[in-house]
Amino acid sequence: MAHADLRDFIQAVEARGELKHVAGANWDVEMGSIVELIYREGKHPKPAVMFDETTGYAKGFRNLFGVLGSTWRIARTLGLPEDKTDPMSVADSWYKKSREIRRIPPKFVTSGPVLENSLTGDKVDVLKFPVPRFHELDKGRYFGTAHCVIQQDPDEGWVNCGTYRVMVVDNKTMALHATPGKHGNIMTYEKYFARKKVMPIAIAVGLDPVLWWLSCQTDTPWGVSEYDAAGGIKGEPLEVIKGEYTGLPFPARAEVVVEGECHPGEFVDEGPFGEWHGYYANRGLLPVPEPVIRVKAIYYRNNPIFTCSQPAVPPHTFTLMLAVADSVAIRRRLEAFGIPGVKSVWAHYTGSGGLFNVISIQQLYSGHARQVGLIASQYPAECGAYTVVVEEDIDPSNLDQVLWAMVTRARLDRQIEILPYCHTNNVHPAIPLKEKRATEHAVPLTAARVVIDACRDLSWKNDWYPIARMSPELRTKLLEKWKSVFSGVIG
Image: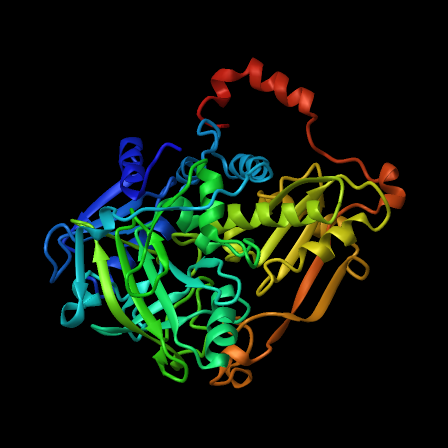
């Protein structure tokens, strides 16, 4: 791979012209809001944003937002071709590569850059770093938004790396929020707390972008470590260090690592926090009891880079990343079910993390579109909302084309299906607060999902009304003949 760690990656990003430096911002709302403005109103490609000289902190304690906020940065991270970086090309390249990846376990080492500095005992202080408060209505500062939480299954021994938000309680304690259905939630409550066992835990910030990518996704199967998957993507093992206090493996080249433990029955109010879909939808502005993390040790590099995400009304810093990842995950699931004729998939980032997904197919048999839609509708497992199936002449990433197919090809009384009582989680923004209880980790919440078959009826497709659209042949001819007219106008 082209990068050894986050710092190598940032050098390439800066050389590409996709890194913006900001000095003197305040950690309290200002830093995150600057990023929110850039990602909602700025021009493409959206840069990664590096903050330094943050109010109240020494120079060299830096914050980085938007690590994977452009298609080029995603391609660079995953080792994909960098000459075609439109969203669908990146998704197609990742689909092809993801089918061939073979997992490579991590390599244990005894030292690494993350051990350059350490804080233990009375010196433990998670606020030594410029931890932001992200939104105006957030209760607290969040240590974990672009990170991975490291846990180990006590029965099977495999290691899970997941992005579950982590709030600062005070200098030596934090709170863990992992939503129901996530591997981290299952491990916490079913593997440790149900047995009255203390759970060792580590939090790594400033990751190799490959591990950050995997920690955010929901398609790594139960029992498979993101470390192994990351090694497979990179083509070489990640280096990890066995933690002195937890025994957990943590990345040797991370920027910051915390070791700690969670005790059964020990909870603290967590939240509120503005989340990825643009709402305070866990319990609104009410806090929720979540497990306490007792911090035992902190390790960090010289001049550490504290990575952050800014979830808000989309688009935000990781909507594009989710769009590419979810698109390929849906396509792989359809492939696993043996469904033929799938041409392309796009999970629209304006739909926030898999809530509006479009699949383009070549219809091959009756009921084909409905079959595709029903299977695809169950991903993401905890929060999918709308699934639209279109034909191969429609670009699923082009909302204008998708809406045109929906309003002209679907017979609404026959081609829209609402599936009630599907699994969801406690951050679903359409579920009223009265349905969410204090012990949310154990509450089985459900919500409906919608499948829209926006394909022409196969039984009379050959007799369908002619389409008023130039042929591919005429398009090619015009682009060649009128280069001077189209130059700089059509990509």
